[in-house]
Image (cartoon, rainbow, N blue to C red; front, side, top):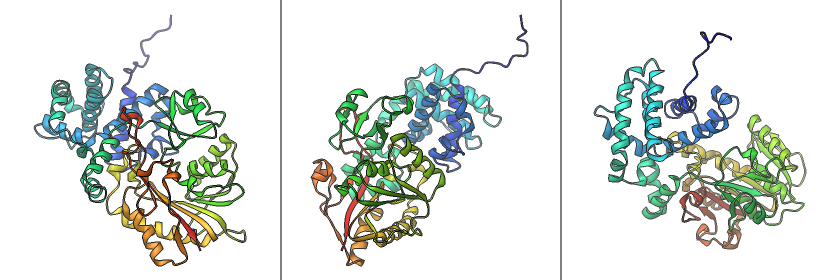
Length: 449
């Protein structure tokens, strides 16, 4: 019988997932690294490959829950800690956040949440001295935490004050609170299907939204869901699927998709019969776009280039140009909760400069009579309504083609008085908030004279 004297100790189940969650939280909160870069691609956390699917899903949900409830968690810990959160040991802070989030919002036994958080700090040289503190605070959280949260229940706690102030000023106090409440819920899975939305809604135990998107609460690896490997659908938020539909009939029309990756809108354009040229400056993102198109058996010309500097070799210009411009992405916080804590108000001015340059480029690529769809996944008017208003004021050869409720699946609350599309995270409400909402998007339809 072989000796087990020198066999490595077996790690406590679930500890690796929480350790990686702590690393990723530290990356967002202290190193200003996005979730996307830490979860996917060459710079992803090296420990992810060793995690089982179940642990990977737990880790993602844990990180997302903490970032969605970060303000509430900060308030709670300030009430439970006499001297505040330790600042000399980031792992102690992460362990407290991870433990409290599990106790309050996740289906994890309190004793397991406490024990694993204590083990997290014990395994870190700088944080080990706080093991007793973490144990005591989380045990108190299990007893008193829900009551302390109920005392100050406010959606605004989990939104940075500068953002809440802006939304209140632009949309009104009631809408701003509704936006914040919608952002606080884990979003469902939205899919754009090639055909027969009703069939795929039934197959995936979901529903077909009025916009044509299939929405489901199914969880687990995307690639294991029915229809994925056959290329029947792709993941795309219901709001993100609206702008490409504003072109109308696309059969045989030549369309440029600027800032195209990861390719959801490119796939829509190609599926609708357009001759698509997709441009993006990131080689990795273009590679992912091509991979997605291959799985979907859709054709498009995908190029790595800076859209502002790119020149089309063909004569005559494009029938249509789609500009999904880089932006602050504040409309996507429900799916990308790190955005709330990584973006700053000062970022907006620099982004509007780029957005204006992209619009000018789009006009240059567009043939007379062609259609320009400009969109951003931002809730900030400087990146949407104001950009388009400035263009219309300065360019006499451009006019707005107003969007109607019919263009937005009859949902007239998504159409502005000026005739643009404006979706809010609180739109499409459902009795179960986990099945409601959509990303915040702005889109305008313009015609070159």
